[in-house]
Length: 179
Image (cartoon, rainbow, N blue to C red):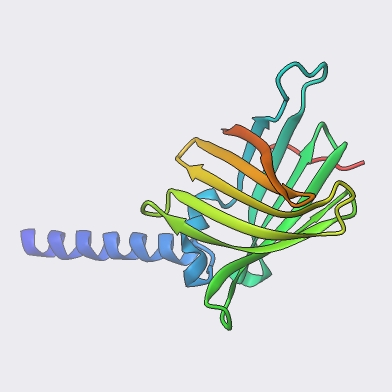
């Protein structure tokens, strides 16, 4: 009788495990390091030192294109500025690439690599149509369970200058607003 109970328990655990795997949507294998961030919402404070107005950035990460891409949407101060990114595996280049489109009318495209056991993302992107003379951006993002720390620098008018930096916290679901 004990043997029958053990077999039943193993069968039930196997079915439970299979149902958990079946519920998890597919994702391109090269995008798997992003899985813990899918369907998450983040908020960070981009306010510059001495600024009169707070600049709060809110974002959402989600699976896109049947798992062949990751889509992120973000908005600063409920639509004053925002953008959408599509992150995907580029088979020809053998790299994780992305496009980022903004409400300011410029867009970027670049690639990223994971370091430190998928806890750090190094990104380098070309900027197209930026009114402020920015032509390149380099950024480092450090990921953990509940925080995302980002720092960047810009190639502006031929010189590298400090860019934005912020620490984002995982927050409850919210609407990412555009005007």
